[in-house]
Length: 196
Image (cartoon, rainbow, N blue to C red):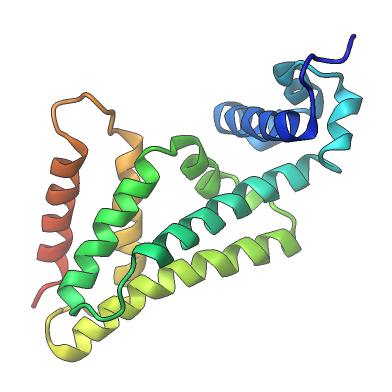
């Protein structure tokens, strides 16, 4: 097979990650071979190893990249000076808005986390905890101020994140509701669940 035209590292590397993401989300990490990824990209299987040492590294880089992007964008948007209710609304709207355009990333971030080797899992889980800690901190501040009535900030954190992430399973642009309407409906549900 001839070298694919334009297969330079700045082009082929991202194409390999995009193909791996698509295939992992569609077929599952365990079922996808490096040969399938290479075929999808249009390169020989051996050429993949110029860009990644193995399939595990590809999965780790995808999950790590998703969390790095999430934390970077969130850090740029978050404001630590808001009252708990305002901070919670900002978090809800951010989470939905960030994730809704990344269905494959969200799917593998939850479904394929278990496929990471222990060291890789620990690094990605640390980043996930960092994100969850922000929400838990907002909920804890609201509990302490009397704005929120929740039994346990950690459990409430996990419940809210699970609910918000669920939007990815059904929301499609151009449907009955706009993204802003969906964010508002979800914000109202979260607010009713936590407000004293």
